[in-house]
Amino acid sequence: MLKSTALRAFASAALMMAGAAQSAHAAWELNLPVGVTPLSREVYDLHMLILWICTVIGIVVFGVMFYSMIMHRKSRGVEPATFHHSTFAEIVWTAIPCVILVAMAIPATKTLIAMEDTSAADMTIKVTGYQWKWRYEYLEDGVDFYSSLANKSRGMVYEDPTSNENYLLDVDKEVVLPVDTKVRVLLTADDVIHAWWVPKLGQKKDAIPGYINEIWTRIDEPGTYRGQCAELCGKDHGFMPIVVKAVSKEDYRAWVDEQKSAEREAAQAAAAALLRDWSKDELIAKGEEVYNNICATCHKQDGLGDKSAGYPAIKGSLVATGPANAHVNLVLQGKAGTQMASFASLDDADLAAVITYQRNAFGNSGSAVQPKEVNEAR
Image (tube, rainbow, N blue to C red):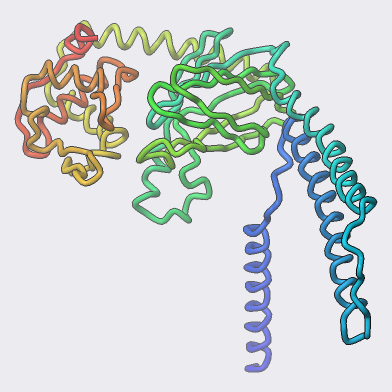
């Protein structure tokens, strides 16, 4: 009985160790992802071609070196050569690398040209980087939205990140693209340099303020593909994920119609919000949610901020306890030379609510700000 129990325990332990080894092997995978676009596969094939060429060169060069050291060592009685110069040898070891480089340059040039060819695109998306979110504008379809780190991912920062397989890689709004469609992506930024990178799509390029870069993609397989900002852009650089969802063309058209309908409803709700006076309690309740989702990243949930990092406290601040119009203008316009960005992308009700919350939370005691006041200040 004891023997069989021990054997079962040993077998279970062995299976666990095998599973752990398999997981570790997956985690240590070093090669590039093949990707889901023709371009990503072309990049992968080019990478493998160059890798094998370099491998062969390494084997040949080190093989000659080791053969020479072993077979022509002094202990074998080999006498050193007496020549000082060989024109033939110099021609050979100059010509061969030139031929190899030209042979490598031809497919590399072909791939680079393909990467830059954004012509004949079926649709165009403009992507703008902000600290720390992305804005997506579908130029032909009239869809426009901001995409930020999802709250569930943000919450993992303060908990156990292993409980979320997509730690810091979930967003509140995905980029939806149709498969089998050439998509031209225009990249720019509003504040500092960012970089839009989704590994499975095979391209990465900087988003630079005042300048427009271009990339393109054609996704073959429906699915969800994740990426990140790949340029160090400030405190929350690691909080700028990208999620691209590839769907059929029919599902994409349905999604566009759904987005336009949602935008009309949001516009109607925003217009209705301007026509009524909100109670202070309503604004504070709504503002707390907006604050925890957006403002708490820098100013902390307790409103004490982080002076060492340049994030002032909301509690007792001159802004939160001063004139309401100055507070509204700061949130709308941001403050040059600081980490305080403009939050004009939020609607009037959200801005009024979060400003009211800041003026009445953390021991502050101030007035309420109505959505119509924010609208007038824009």
